[in-house]
Length: 194
Image (cartoon, rainbow, N blue to C red; front, side, top):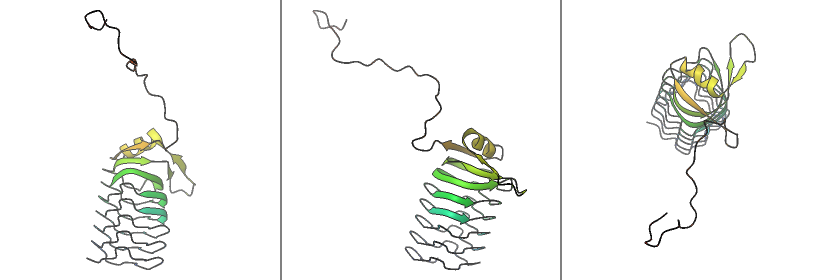
């Protein structure tokens, strides 16, 4: 196993590298090229991957808890069973990627998906929306909320889309609240509440 924890890897080329099981905890891999690299079971906890290229990389079983992926090309990458909990995925191209059985938890998830993106078994919670493209050269469309949940569910996954902080939520069924009690209830001469 390679220990690259805390390393500055900005702009480095790891094209086709074998980094299975590597420890990149808190590494700065901004603008690095991992095209075709094997990062299976790697620890990428709190790793900065902004601007990185993960095209065709294998990150199966990797741990990307609280990692930062902003403006990343991850087309055709494999993230089978990857843990993305608390990670920021902003402007990440996941067309053709395999997210089967990956786990998300409260992720910023502004990504591009297509009908070739595999989401079977994908689970967890995300802040959307995503851009869904059809591969026909169109710019695609934004998909969020219940529509995104249904799109994933139709492909064998189960995610819940959370409202963005500060965004009003849809009103649910009215709930009856218990009356507010202030002070002490009146009592009779024997001290029994009336």
